[in-house]
Length: 64
Image (cartoon, rainbow, N blue to C red):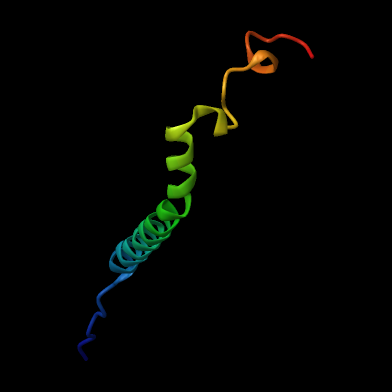
């Protein structure tokens, strides 16, 4: 009686799951990048369009 051992593919499954997850993150990130191109252009033309500008309310911890 000889038993045939089945190969354990756990490591292969983990590597494939990681590759699929990394691919999904890359696809979402590249798709979202173009979403903010118009905002980036507007901020580069006039920095007062940014929510992160340095005005009186946001400078040096001044109170309202």
